[in-house]
Length: 253
Image 1: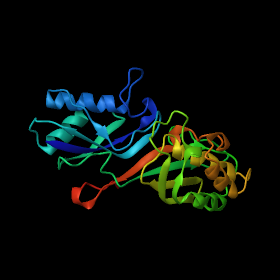
Image 2: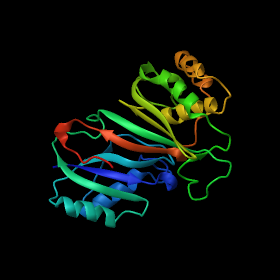
Image 3: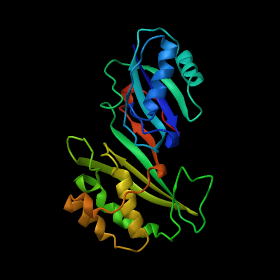
Image 4: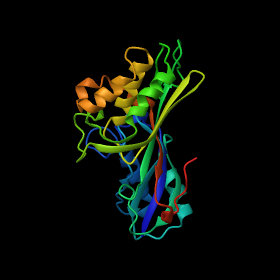
């Protein structure tokens, strides 16, 4: 039996999603919780690996188990064995053809910026504080250059292991609400640090240090060294994973 679960987490205390020998990954605590409920070792596959300090509202994972449990028992059993900063939101039996990663149509991330002169203690782990005024309209004009399918080599981490740098961004919006600026990006898939590198460059433009055409120049260069500094990880949240309707998965709110 294959089961999919929706996961949310505050990534502050974790060395990213992946299970690892140094530090603790979110995957480790999820699998430990599932294994206790199943009384057997459980391994999970996620929709997209998040980096150290990155958060998720709608991570999706799947696992296989022969153990018979109701979805209610899986859900509440998992949560009773998870720390407070990781939570399962739903559980559902899925077709054996479902794959959390390969069945996904698109992923959506939000990068959050607090744009005010005074920092916030309460939001220090959830948003990038920039005290200099940002022009969100200039940021949007710059971001528009990224729409469509491109070689995003200039926005990938040096250690990125993706087999191809070609990705397609279907939506990128910069919205301001008072002191808050949200950069929302949807793509078929992302390269390591891709959203953080985009956010860092857009912030440079928003502060008036470059014009919007710089994004196109950086994109066409395929040179990460021209892309500027990556935005810090703690401002990034995985917001949504889209799948074909046939899988009928719960929608993140």
